Length: 252
Image 1 (cartoon, helix red, strand yellow):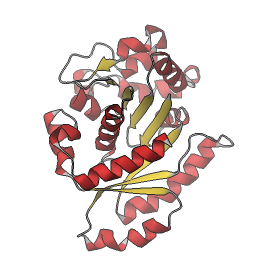
Image 2 (image 1 turned 90 degrees about the vertical axis):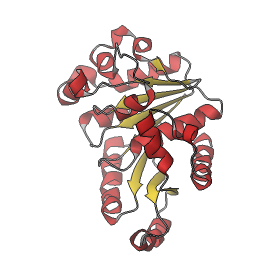
Image 3 (image 1 turned 30 degrees about the vertical axis):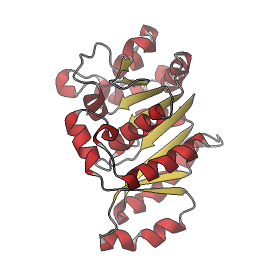
Image 4 (image 1 turned 180 degrees about the vertical axis):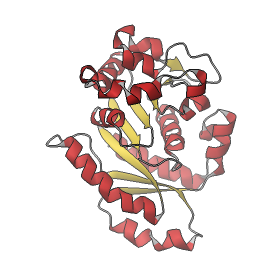
């Protein structure tokens, strides 16, 4: 099983949209995929849970992994696509409290690794973490439990300025470990017609990482509002080309 962490320490860059679309593309390729919603806002859960009741959420497993991961896994409307959801705080979600208190407890130092191990036992080919926008102690656990971490940025100077700090922080976190791999960057909501974004392309091209430019695509927004996958609405051909390349590189 391969574990991928979709990350950025800022919100509003489209991490959830990318996570959902990437997971669906893997399913289309015949893979069995588990998405893990590690954001207490629960946007990924809202999109893919089809308003189904959530008995056990991610926080329940993080607080007591003896309940078994399978009790927190829910099937989506798409064959071979599953999710471990997180409830919103207004709905009684406990994830934010775990981020504040549980994540810093010594006994929880390996909890994300336990989650990955238990997911592999359930027969998943891929696990994808959709992280909250913070370089928190909780997110550090999800990052270190992953085979690779892929930051999602917007084509903006502020996002790119923060990229260097991200790489420095990640290297310190990894220490001498080879994982997680971090050789890919996804730039989301790219508009060729915007002069400001176009002016940043030379800087992006100079980066050593593999770069992917996902264009502005209204299918993502409509999918979030409709509680379905963007592919069900129909993504742009150029969007599909980018995801084809991402998948090709991930599967190696």
